[in-house]
Length: 138
Image (cartoon, rainbow, N blue to C red; front, side, top):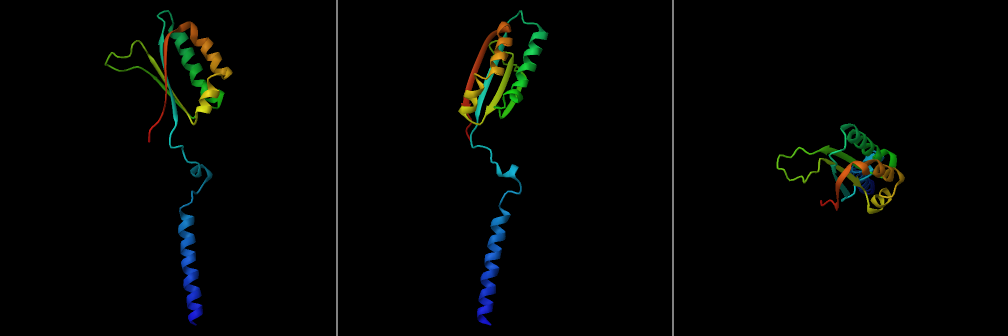
């Protein structure tokens, strides 16, 4: 009887341990994919020429917004226009923030044909561009 009790106690402890370990596993493959601890941000600021028309600028905005899906290399993308009251924008009106998982992804994006085509569209309207890349800090 004592051996049966010991066996049952060991079995119960192992079962509880297994349940505890399994309950900590992600429920889906999506949850299993952890975001990297750091990501590479690619910040692009545009100042357009005075001669650039509103229609040209809208076309450039639309073309830039297509790059994440057309290249398949950009993890996240957001953009907007300057609304700062500080007057420290140095003429930059548009900010685009691209997020990459790695330098390799960024390095593949830069010479990508769709990125190059975007540059050809942008060039005639661009007065100045500023680009800053950085690794996020946790």
